[in-house]
Amino acid sequence: MAKTRVVVVDDSALVRSLLSEIINRQPDMQCVGTAADPLAAREVIRNLNPDVITLDVEMPKMDGLDFLSKLMRLRPMPVVMVSTLTERGAETTLRALELGAIDFVAKPKLGIADGLRQLAEEITEKVRIAAKAHVSRHVAPSAAAAAAAAAAGGSSSGAAATGSAARQDVRAVPPAATPSLGRVSTEKIIFIGASTGGTEATKEVLLGLPHDAPGVVITQHMPPGFTRSYAARLDGLCRIRVKEAQDGERILPGHAYIAPGGLHLSVERSGANYIARVRDGEPVNRHKPSVEVLFESAARVVGANAFGIMLTGMGADGAKAMRQMKDAGSYNYCQDEATCVVFGMPREAIAHGAADEVLPLAQIAPHLMAKLRETHGALLHRV
Picture 1 (tube, one colour):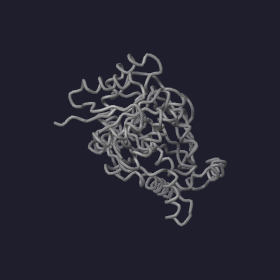
Picture 2 (cartoon, one colour; picture 1 turned 135 degrees about the vertical axis):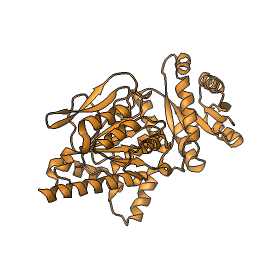
Picture 3 (tube, helix red, strand yellow; picture 1 turned 120 degrees about the vertical axis):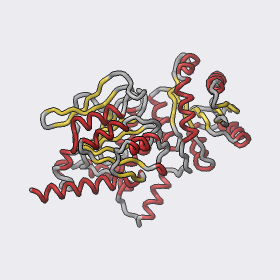
Picture 4 (cartoon, helix red, strand yellow; picture 1 turned 90 degrees about the vertical axis):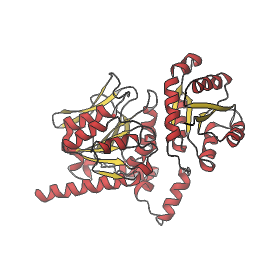
């Protein structure tokens, strides 16, 4: 079987040497070239045509994000970012995922040599995943939004309605004061599980939810140090509020709660309310946070009041628990293969019989809201 061909782009000679060594120790991959800056990388990529690139952010001659933006627009290919674990590093990494990077590795600030060697398994696993990922040509968000608005005749419906002024106006109204979903929004909870490619997939689902949507709880495989920045980024874009989950807080309509990196998130009942439970513990399915932990609590505690959504990701985390959710009465959606970066987690959930609907990413939020309104109508009819 042919080896995965990797090009390492980093301005540090030490990092280039370490990453090359880590990659070349694997029987199924080979570092075929390195570059110290994006301009040199352009020539290396053109000459060697690699399968995967590892890319640093802060480099001379051209910023890594600028290079990534050009690369994904002109010659899309799988990219794994190697980013320093700092607040600024978290922001730039999230921007890189928006631009089309498949995944990232948090590079240690100190003890770089020992730190990277300890991350060898994570680095090579993410290179393997990236090599199999679906990569599409990236369109800049501003251009995409303009095209969508033009296609809609200038209307501001759906995700296009998420301008800052519109968000401020809508989110100023308390969820309980709006009639569109009524009591259903206080009774239902939406559960989302995602991994590789999931930061952007989750964003698209949340952008499609109105400000009075049911509470949303999310487990996205992400290390400590990144989830708070991710939640803040989504909060600035969505009509619902988005935050990192805190232990014991009530899950409210019009809010989304993201599992903190390195901790498990589940849901418990407290009287008539649902609350978030954030706990440390052993990894489940090799992950912490784990989708399995979140979805198991949905089946055990929420039952028929739950809606499950399984988005793009490698592996099978959450598949068994999503079937438990379905058996307990939830209604579940899985992202389809064509729109997944990696079709692992949705495929496994479908194989377990957990999916009620398998949909392209863009259709999940509209179908979910239609189902909620259908349920709400049925409830009103019985009253």
